[in-house]
Figure (cartoon, rainbow, N blue to C red):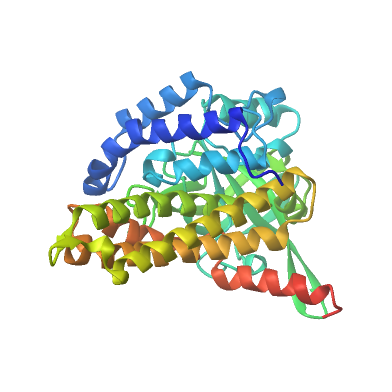
Length: 386
């Protein structure tokens, strides 16, 4: 692994950071107050990213994407992590799973998503099926050449603006020594399709304006042509194309932590108590030292996992380590930043209380900290026959 960035990678970092500071930061307070992103702001961000040629940067050039590798995309996501997720959502990064599209699906879903003509959302989680995906109850029953879907998904990020949803649904069940095991199939379902409805979700304290939604299927009939990948092959599609999504949580956690740290560092220089800068007191200076050490460690752990993917190396354990460490690091860093600011850190005059709130969900979505530790320990034990 090379520890320096190429000129092109440096350009990516500088371009994205400059965009976030200029086009995202100024709208953050408004989104916090409103609880949603005004359409004109969303359209403006999307239009500017398209003009820059940075839309769908995670897709290969041969299908019209930006062609970034995993490391470069991690650098981009790290800089986007500095800004409000509700706003950076419109820097389009469609789900890579759309690369599984075949035939007409490419014209209806893949290419329009890459061009910014249609937006997607990914749906797996249900009220009774979070970490245990195979316990999902939403079921698709075969009826001739169609499927009839019934059930509910919730906590679906991005669905508020999605033109279609990539949804994982149970399509059968096998008996195993450990009990029944669901067979899962991935479907493409358009907004407004009969029997399918996207409803407002719950009010979350994290990432205001980046709404979670509830999806309901009521005798929703869709044809075979809407199956993404193979019937009962949902986990194959998932493992092929969603393998690296946890890196996004890690990289964005690092980006947000660096922004928080910048606030704390500047405040430690500007704030004076007892006749000197508070940064000269060990109680503050040691906090700063610990914060930057953890941020750097999370950064390199994350970039190393992305690099391993680019090198074709096994990276499941490394990605899990990056996700759990970076998300938990962000919680510690935001908490310490507020401690340095004292009472003002909790006031909404500053964005620190928002970062503190936002940090909480990172340890839950895309696999909880407990799930990541399970992945890590399982990998270690299996090598020794455990």
